[in-house]
Length: 332
Length: 136
Image (cartoon, rainbow over all chains, first blue to last red; front, side):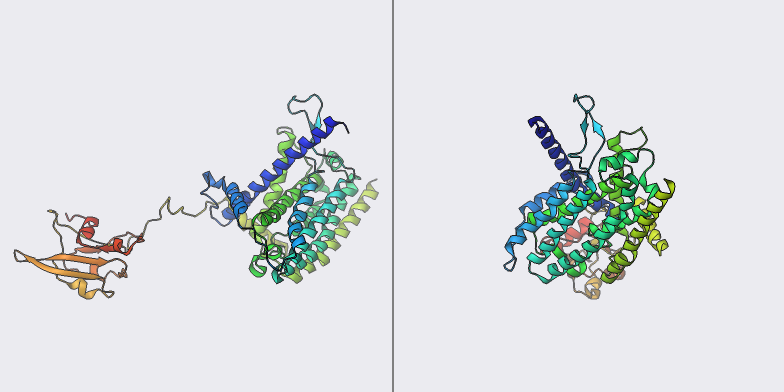
């Protein structure tokens, strides 16, 4: 790799990191605003016009809060787990394509690909990193040595393992259709028709499983405020809590991006809008749906969660795979 | 099984597009309704003198013992030398307004009765007169 190329990759990483952090910050405001309006409230209104400075105020508050370390905590994992939950989530952005290629309106001589790397096992990498992020939560719940966090951690482990299976099964249909694990190739194959048309069941399974993977209502048992206080991050404060928080919101962005790439045709769309705008629009629609679900449904009971995961999601996933495969064989 | 889930989504979406009912309180005020019983005031005569004739009925009827009057006489007419109303003791029942034979004391619609010190709600004659309206 030439030094030039390395500089280029570093610039791309910095731009995407900054963009992700900005979207994470403003996603919190977006969520609060959407939830508020769904409850006929206004949400944050005081920090800046319509609360536009609220995420910055929250950030400053979290930064200056006291960093509590409980006496009973397992120090090593206590320090490690926030990082363990956010770093894999951020690493997923390495393979996510944000667009085809661009010359930045003629500023650059050669067109640049709008993804940091193009891995030919991109989707596998995404699931692997998502799996590693689970450890952050499980270790975090364990390391605090506190019964609520432990319960949260145990629940997180059980839930994430169950739904990881359904999550992976839900995208098999797309892999069969595209014949590739490379995310850019999958998007290219959707130039004429989005895969949501061929894979409606797959998309719904993906959406439900990703909400469960994100530990968000109606599947927010690991952090259930009303029973486990805050679950796996009960004893965390200050920036350690903020890292868990950022990891959660960054993974919302990841899931929305993956959903856009796999089912909604990525950056393809009618040509009256530029591709990147189409991409962002679809990502934000998926984010809105995830927040919308939170505003609508109550939390599931634990047995309902497990029953739904193993008896509905996984069999449906298998049926979807076999149906897709059979149709593909018949068509070919 | 699916229909109620979709119905729930429709309800939240309907609320999402409807106008919020929040009132931004310190910036915007709801106001009080017509029959609201708020902080008292005493009406003035057109010449600026107090309408109260110091009959003492309000002092007697007040269940919270919030009113204290000192009665004086000037050219054969009774008038209150002092008229003290403790806004913190008052329960805003409105009996003083009901019982007043000359319609001097009345309850306004003022509802923001929060003060920093107790003295600020110890209303004397001048304060009550200043708050009160002129009789036509």
